[in-house]
Image 1 (tube, rainbow, N blue to C red):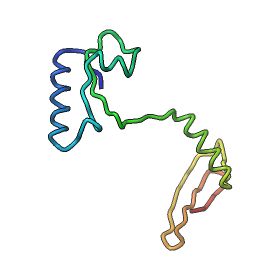
Image 2: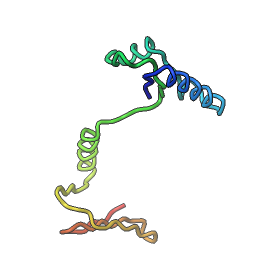
Image 3: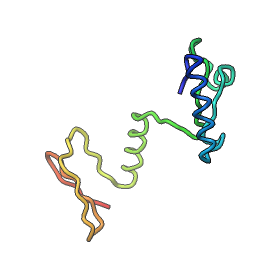
Length: 110
């Protein structure tokens, strides 16, 4: 979370301290001033005064993730059907299987 005003900086630092008081550590959340933040993100705009940084936080590119999951699923024998709308997903506790119904087909598996 970026801070653009001095008021946001004060609140951001207070938030980090509150988190630490609840048992979080600098491995979970830390306040970085502008110079520290620029070391991690050199393209920060000039208006950024500080940031709350979550070192363990991560993000992914959704398109790349789906592409990789699709490739791995195919290697495991999964049939990938594109261009179909899913109408229903059900789970059968007795057989521990899922059933997926699309507009044209139905599929089942574990």
